[in-house]
Amino acid sequence: MAQFHIYPNPGIRKVEIPYLVAVQNDHITSRTGATVVIPLRANAQPVEIMAPWVEVPGHGMFVLSTDEIFAIDTGRLKVSVGLLSPSDRAKIKPAIDKVIGEY
Image 1 (cartoon, helix red, strand yellow):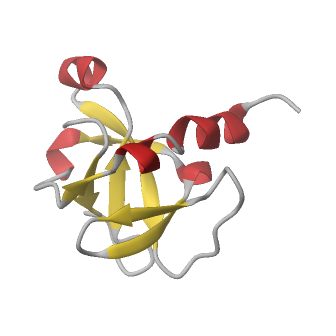
Image 2 (image 1 turned 90 degrees about the vertical axis):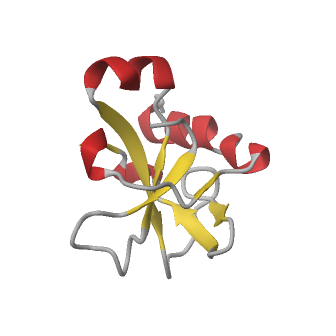
């Protein structure tokens, strides 16, 4: 699993969450057999910082649903459909900080 690669959702909610983006670094993923992913939602409204728009190359724009972050067994993720652009990658850390930060 490569960090920032986008995978088809292997779960049952493929219509509303068609893709998952791997956000865990490769060093950890290669040792655990799991990776942390953030769902990419279709037909959702973005939320400033926490749930921004990101592009799945060749498939359109989706909302990075950071508040739904989870870990998944790497064996469930098949062929990557693309890679987040550097500008979309830069949205991830602030989004995670917004979800888990102190207020």
